Amino acid sequence: MNLEALDGRLLFAIPKKGRLHEKCLQLLSGADIQFRRPQRLDVCLVMNHPIALIFLPAADIPSFVGNGNVDLGITGHDVILEACMQDSVTEVLRLGFGKCSLQVQVPERGSVTAVEDLAGKRIVTSFEVLAGEFFNKIDDQLNLVADQRTKIQYIGGSVEAACALGLADGIVDLVESGDTMRAAGLRAISTVLETEAVLIKSNSSSRPDLTSLINLIGNRIAGVVAAEKFVVCSYNISRDALPLAVQITPGRRAPTISPLDQDGWVDVSSMVLKKDSAKVMDELVKIGAQDILIFAIDNCRV
Image 1 (cartoon, rainbow, N blue to C red):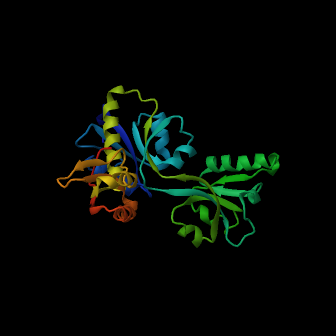
Image 2: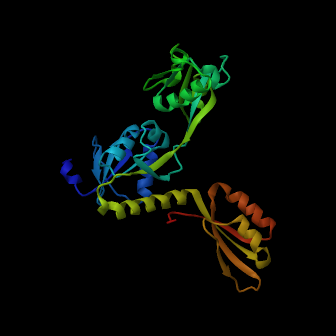
Image 3: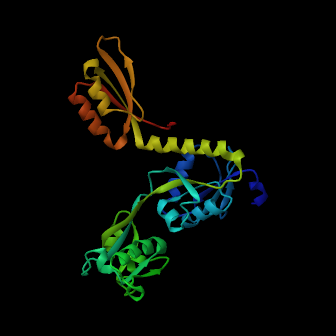
C-alpha cells in the first residue's frame, strides 16, 4: 500500500496477533468499522470512514500512539506501564476483555512463601520495568545494598520454564486461567497488577480536525462494550414497592418508569449487568414484581 494514502486519515493501531487480536476484530465489527485486510499487509483502509488500521505488536502500540502519529490504539494496560507511556497516552476506555494478572510465581514445591523471600535472588520476566519497580520497593524496605539487590533478567518468551531450567528463583508473568502456571509446577505468591485491554489515544495529537472522529469511534466502541456487559430488565411493579425496585435496578443513570392502565402499577425498564441478571430477577420476585423480562442489547450508546 502507498503510505501517501494514509494522509488525512485517522490512524488506529490494532494488535496484529495474540490474545487481544480476535476480540479487537469483533469490537471493530460491532462499531461498524468496515475494512478488508489484504494478506500479509499490516496496513488497510477503512471503507466507511477516513481511518487507516495499522496492525502492530501490542507491546509497540503505546509508543506509536504516545510518540508517533498514530491517533488511537488498543493494547493492554500492563503494556502501557511497561513501556513507561502512561504520561503520553490517555486510557479512553477499559474494554472488558484480555483480563489477567501480572503475578510473581515460584516453584510449587520450593521453600519460598512470600515475595520478601525472593529479595536478592534471580527473577526472570518479560516485564523488566514493572518487575524492577516491584522488587526495588522490596529491596528498599529491606535496606539491601547494591550487590545484595534482586537481579531482574529479561527474556522474551518461555518465562514459565525459567525456574525448572535453573535460570531463575522466581518469575513475573501474566496469568489468565492459571493452567500454564500450574503445568509448569508454579504457584503465585503476589500480584503486581491487574490488567485488561484498553482503548488509548495520544496526548499530543497535532490534528485537531480528527477530534470529532476520535470521539465518534470512542463512543461507538463504548456502546459495543456496554452492549456486551448489560441487558435490559423490564417488569411491572406496584407503586408502593417502587422505591425498593429502584434500589435493585438503579440502571446506569436511572430506570425508565412508565404508568400502566391499572391504577397503582408502573412498568420499569432498566439496564442491569448481564452477570447479575438472574439474581436481579430473584430479588424483584421477592418484592412482588411481575412479568419480568430480560432483553439482550445488540448495540447502544451510553
